[in-house]
Length: 202
Image 1: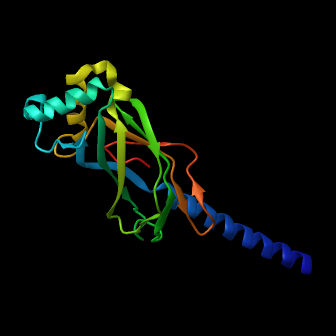
Image 2: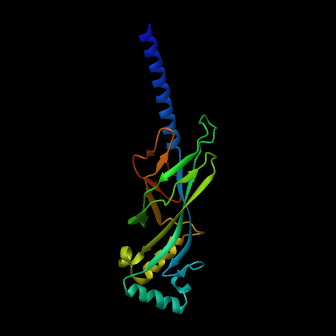
Protein backbone atom coordinates (compact mmCIF):
# COMPACT_ATOMS: atom_id res chain seq x y z
CA UNK A 1 0.00 0.00 0.00
CA UNK A 2 2.85 2.39 0.88
CA UNK A 3 4.46 1.68 -2.46
CA UNK A 4 1.24 2.51 -4.27
CA UNK A 5 0.86 5.77 -2.34
CA UNK A 6 4.49 6.71 -2.99
CA UNK A 7 4.13 5.91 -6.69
CA UNK A 8 0.94 7.95 -6.89
CA UNK A 9 2.55 10.94 -5.19
CA UNK A 10 5.60 10.67 -7.45
CA UNK A 11 3.38 10.51 -10.54
CA UNK A 12 1.33 13.48 -9.33
CA UNK A 13 4.47 15.54 -8.70
CA UNK A 14 5.93 14.52 -12.06
CA UNK A 15 2.75 15.53 -13.89
CA UNK A 16 2.64 18.88 -12.09
CA UNK A 17 6.31 19.51 -12.84
CA UNK A 18 5.85 18.54 -16.50
CA UNK A 19 2.86 20.87 -16.80
CA UNK A 20 4.85 23.68 -15.16
CA UNK A 21 7.80 23.17 -17.50
CA UNK A 22 5.52 23.02 -20.54
CA UNK A 23 3.64 26.17 -19.50
CA UNK A 24 6.91 28.01 -18.90
CA UNK A 25 8.24 27.06 -22.33
CA UNK A 26 4.98 28.17 -23.94
CA UNK A 27 5.10 31.51 -22.12
CA UNK A 28 8.70 32.13 -23.20
CA UNK A 29 7.92 31.18 -26.81
CA UNK A 30 5.18 33.82 -26.93
CA UNK A 31 7.61 36.72 -26.49
CA UNK A 32 7.67 38.83 -29.65
CA UNK A 33 10.34 41.08 -31.12
CA UNK A 34 10.38 43.72 -33.86
CA UNK A 35 12.81 46.41 -35.00
CA UNK A 36 11.62 49.86 -34.02
CA UNK A 37 13.00 53.26 -34.88
CA UNK A 38 16.59 54.03 -35.77
CA UNK A 39 17.74 57.13 -33.88
CA UNK A 40 20.77 59.39 -33.53
CA UNK A 41 22.38 58.43 -36.85
CA UNK A 42 25.84 59.94 -37.30
CA UNK A 43 28.05 59.39 -40.34
CA UNK A 44 31.66 60.26 -39.52
CA UNK A 45 30.24 62.45 -36.76
CA UNK A 46 27.81 64.23 -39.10
CA UNK A 47 24.10 64.08 -38.27
CA UNK A 48 21.97 62.97 -41.21
CA UNK A 49 18.70 64.07 -39.63
CA UNK A 50 16.59 65.75 -42.30
CA UNK A 51 18.86 64.59 -45.12
CA UNK A 52 17.49 62.41 -47.92
CA UNK A 53 20.22 62.61 -50.59
CA UNK A 54 23.89 63.42 -51.08
CA UNK A 55 22.87 66.94 -52.20
CA UNK A 56 21.62 67.70 -48.68
CA UNK A 57 25.19 67.70 -47.29
CA UNK A 58 26.99 71.03 -47.34
CA UNK A 59 30.37 71.51 -48.99
CA UNK A 60 32.42 71.03 -45.81
CA UNK A 61 30.53 67.86 -44.95
CA UNK A 62 31.07 66.44 -48.44
CA UNK A 63 34.81 67.18 -48.19
CA UNK A 64 34.98 65.43 -44.82
CA UNK A 65 33.06 62.38 -46.04
CA UNK A 66 35.09 62.18 -49.27
CA UNK A 67 38.32 62.21 -47.26
CA UNK A 68 37.01 59.49 -44.97
CA UNK A 69 36.12 57.21 -47.89
CA UNK A 70 39.50 57.93 -49.50
CA UNK A 71 41.06 56.64 -46.27
CA UNK A 72 38.87 53.51 -46.49
CA UNK A 73 36.84 54.44 -43.46
CA UNK A 74 33.27 55.69 -43.11
CA UNK A 75 32.14 55.24 -39.51
CA UNK A 76 28.42 55.23 -38.80
CA UNK A 77 26.78 55.11 -35.39
CA UNK A 78 23.12 54.85 -34.47
CA UNK A 79 20.71 53.49 -31.91
CA UNK A 80 18.65 50.56 -33.13
CA UNK A 81 15.56 50.14 -30.96
CA UNK A 82 14.28 46.59 -30.61
CA UNK A 83 10.63 46.44 -29.55
CA UNK A 84 9.77 43.50 -27.28
CA UNK A 85 6.24 42.49 -26.39
CA UNK A 86 5.19 40.01 -23.71
CA UNK A 87 1.57 38.96 -24.41
CA UNK A 88 1.36 36.81 -21.25
CA UNK A 89 -0.93 39.32 -19.53
CA UNK A 90 -3.32 36.87 -17.90
CA UNK A 91 -5.88 36.77 -20.71
CA UNK A 92 -6.64 34.12 -23.31
CA UNK A 93 -5.94 31.25 -20.95
CA UNK A 94 -2.32 32.23 -20.36
CA UNK A 95 -1.17 33.20 -16.85
CA UNK A 96 0.30 36.66 -16.32
CA UNK A 97 4.06 36.17 -16.52
CA UNK A 98 6.82 38.76 -16.50
CA UNK A 99 9.98 37.96 -18.45
CA UNK A 100 13.59 39.00 -17.99
CA UNK A 101 15.89 38.81 -20.98
CA UNK A 102 19.24 37.86 -19.48
CA UNK A 103 21.22 37.72 -22.71
CA UNK A 104 20.52 38.81 -26.28
CA UNK A 105 23.49 37.97 -28.53
CA UNK A 106 22.81 39.57 -31.88
CA UNK A 107 24.22 39.90 -35.38
CA UNK A 108 23.37 42.90 -37.54
CA UNK A 109 22.61 42.43 -41.23
CA UNK A 110 22.52 45.40 -43.58
CA UNK A 111 21.03 44.71 -47.02
CA UNK A 112 21.28 40.98 -46.21
CA UNK A 113 25.02 41.23 -45.47
CA UNK A 114 26.30 40.26 -42.02
CA UNK A 115 28.25 43.04 -40.35
CA UNK A 116 28.89 43.30 -36.61
CA UNK A 117 27.66 41.45 -33.52
CA UNK A 118 27.09 42.21 -29.85
CA UNK A 119 24.98 41.56 -26.77
CA UNK A 120 23.04 43.37 -24.07
CA UNK A 121 25.00 45.19 -21.43
CA UNK A 122 22.48 44.24 -18.72
CA UNK A 123 19.26 42.21 -18.28
CA UNK A 124 16.03 43.74 -19.57
CA UNK A 125 12.62 43.18 -17.96
CA UNK A 126 9.61 42.71 -20.26
CA UNK A 127 6.45 42.90 -18.09
CA UNK A 128 3.48 40.70 -18.89
CA UNK A 129 1.26 43.60 -19.92
CA UNK A 130 1.15 43.25 -23.69
CA UNK A 131 2.76 46.68 -23.98
CA UNK A 132 6.01 47.41 -25.79
CA UNK A 133 9.37 47.39 -24.04
CA UNK A 134 12.10 49.13 -26.03
CA UNK A 135 15.59 47.63 -25.97
CA UNK A 136 18.07 50.22 -27.32
CA UNK A 137 21.13 48.79 -29.05
CA UNK A 138 23.96 51.20 -29.84
CA UNK A 139 25.65 50.31 -33.12
CA UNK A 140 29.07 51.49 -34.29
CA UNK A 141 30.61 50.18 -37.49
CA UNK A 142 32.71 51.06 -40.51
CA UNK A 143 30.40 51.09 -43.53
CA UNK A 144 33.35 51.18 -45.93
CA UNK A 145 34.62 47.85 -44.60
CA UNK A 146 31.46 46.06 -45.70
CA UNK A 147 30.25 48.14 -48.67
CA UNK A 148 33.35 49.58 -50.36
CA UNK A 149 32.10 48.22 -53.70
CA UNK A 150 29.26 50.75 -53.70
CA UNK A 151 31.57 53.73 -54.13
CA UNK A 152 31.22 57.09 -52.37
CA UNK A 153 27.70 58.03 -53.43
CA UNK A 154 26.42 54.48 -52.95
CA UNK A 155 27.70 54.27 -49.37
CA UNK A 156 26.21 57.65 -48.50
CA UNK A 157 22.85 56.58 -49.93
CA UNK A 158 23.06 53.42 -47.83
CA UNK A 159 23.76 55.48 -44.71
CA UNK A 160 20.70 57.59 -45.46
CA UNK A 161 18.61 54.45 -46.03
CA UNK A 162 19.66 53.08 -42.64
CA UNK A 163 17.94 56.00 -40.95
CA UNK A 164 14.85 54.90 -42.86
CA UNK A 165 11.54 56.51 -43.61
CA UNK A 166 10.21 58.14 -40.43
CA UNK A 167 12.98 56.40 -38.51
CA UNK A 168 12.12 52.85 -39.61
CA UNK A 169 14.55 51.01 -41.88
CA UNK A 170 13.78 48.03 -44.10
CA UNK A 171 17.51 47.68 -44.85
CA UNK A 172 18.25 46.23 -41.42
CA UNK A 173 17.70 42.81 -39.87
CA UNK A 174 18.84 41.53 -36.51
CA UNK A 175 19.51 37.86 -35.83
CA UNK A 176 19.33 37.17 -32.10
CA UNK A 177 19.27 34.20 -29.74
CA UNK A 178 17.70 35.39 -26.47
CA UNK A 179 18.16 33.80 -23.06
CA UNK A 180 15.19 34.35 -20.76
CA UNK A 181 15.11 33.70 -17.00
CA UNK A 182 12.25 31.54 -15.72
CA UNK A 183 11.11 29.62 -12.61
CA UNK A 184 12.75 26.49 -14.05
CA UNK A 185 16.04 28.21 -14.87
CA UNK A 186 17.46 30.13 -17.83
CA UNK A 187 15.95 29.22 -21.18
CA UNK A 188 17.93 29.90 -24.36
CA UNK A 189 16.11 29.87 -27.67
CA UNK A 190 17.08 26.81 -29.72
CA UNK A 191 17.74 28.90 -32.83
CA UNK A 192 18.22 32.49 -33.93
CA UNK A 193 15.28 34.80 -34.46
CA UNK A 194 15.24 37.03 -37.52
CA UNK A 195 13.98 40.39 -36.30
CA UNK A 196 12.84 42.96 -38.85
CA UNK A 197 10.80 46.17 -38.84
CA UNK A 198 7.73 44.94 -40.71
CA UNK A 199 6.28 42.45 -38.22
CA UNK A 200 6.81 40.82 -34.87
CA UNK A 201 8.87 37.62 -34.65
CA UNK A 202 8.61 34.97 -31.94
